[in-house]
Length: 572
Image 1 (cartoon, helix red, strand yellow):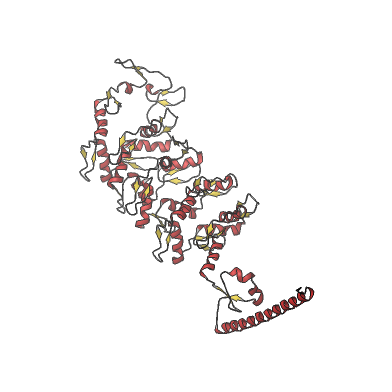
Image 2: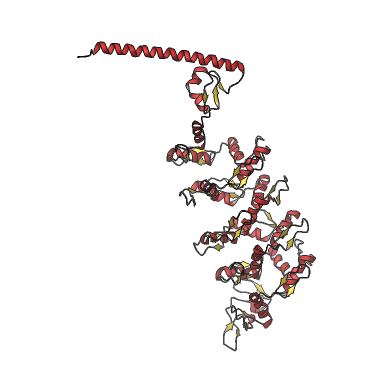
């Protein structure tokens, strides 16, 4: 790594040059033009100022190079694909996409790189060195570019504007990526399968679906990742760090993407629109995920069972069925979860928090998914249609579950008894029959339930809530099942018949507790000719009994009238 003879007495860090010692406060370089002093010689040399944005550079070449970011000039053209670049270095870097040349190899893990600078930055993932520190918040970075990007969180600087839509970006690279949403350009192609991507990161992530390489390992839990960035994001699950803060409301996030998505709840901006159905999204990733509902594409394949998924999140969630990994534990009850988001949702069962409110009716929910599902009661939206029977659904997941009624697929198997289920929720409910777990408790009466839905249904006894209303007569019910039973009274449907007399009922409960059950003792649907003959005979017998009862009643009424006439004779 080279000799570093200058140690810092403040922090113990060593440097190859004395001028790198920053804690001394010494500013030994003074401008003879204006008298201003600097700690770094390089800052003194920055005499060339950009007339557009005021940024300074140490020589004319760097200024001219910078000015191209304002003019849009791109004089360097790739002969392979025709792409243009403002800097010749960027052209050279781009050309290695076509040649595949990667001459710089990491001695630790064997990974190769096209540029020596990329190798140096990569080596810091092994050494842990982070030489670039933000003077605003003290956060350190392995690459100077990462520090520059981070500093714009503090300054809010976004010098790169899209000419199509006016959106601004902190870096030219982010602008170029954004412009591809307008042009549809996908310059990065996988040599294995020919799939193209708008961003190099998308290609790299995709390539590891072929190689399965995961060189970055978490020292806390041993989980491995394909990218160092993914490892850093994961580590925040252990540290609780949330470095991205919303300037509007102060809410903090572990990932920049979470902050960007949140900020659009303030602005309402949805710049990404599906050309198929016109639906708009706040993020391009959400648009890409949505477009797969139209194309049917499922690019994420499980190497364990061969199942494919349209969304990476669904794929990762599925993999934990095989690994059984549940790194997130509830401090209240000790229950563990595969995903941090699942833990957050679960914790609301303890706190009672319901942060998602319907603007139509004011009802609140603990999960955003429950709110979205509920809102479709108001809109009636059902985008997902079964190609087998034509039935439509509001959610893609509901369609997948429904399709299993046609295929008979039951992918969720109980490890205790081997019973399989079409839905993961059904498996989880079933598993509680083995464990006896009842984690959902009513705060009113203390009764416990194995499922949250059972608790919600039970709570309506206390609240009197009846959310299921009959559109025919306006009568309301606490459960959907009771509403369905009630609806049969309007259409006259009576699918349950008494085997003795043939009398029809609209639900099984009527037969079990009604007089016909006590009278005959046999229930079911209509059957053989012999059974039908017996029903006819019994009907005649019942009619005779009813006629006899009427005679007795009439006689008693007559006797009563005679008695009353004797006791209270009419007075004329």
